[in-house]
Image 1 (cartoon, helix red, strand yellow):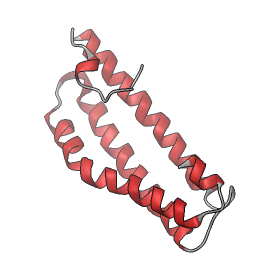
Image 2 (cartoon, helix red, strand yellow; image 1 turned 135 degrees about the vertical axis):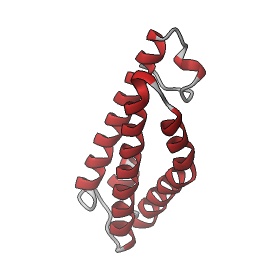
Image 3 (cartoon, one colour; image 1 turned 45 degrees about the vertical axis):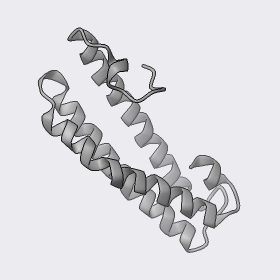
Length: 119
């Protein structure tokens, strides 16, 4: 998203935002299901993760709207992209907190977290 936002192609930015938002739409139910079934110390963390993804979806819709209106270049959606990056950092931090709980419970986070997530 950052690369698309820094370029001069509003169509590319709109498509990237729409694709990322669609990913959230497709996967949100599964994430909410995991959150609903979580117990113990990580239960609230899963709920927090769902809230972060809901906010991320909202920001992506704003970026898509800016790009669809012709906005492009580094300044067009700078505030929204910065907000998206902050949300990504929050999601990573919460995911790592969940991984710590898994380790403390004797579980291996690699068995549950997406490939490539390192904490």
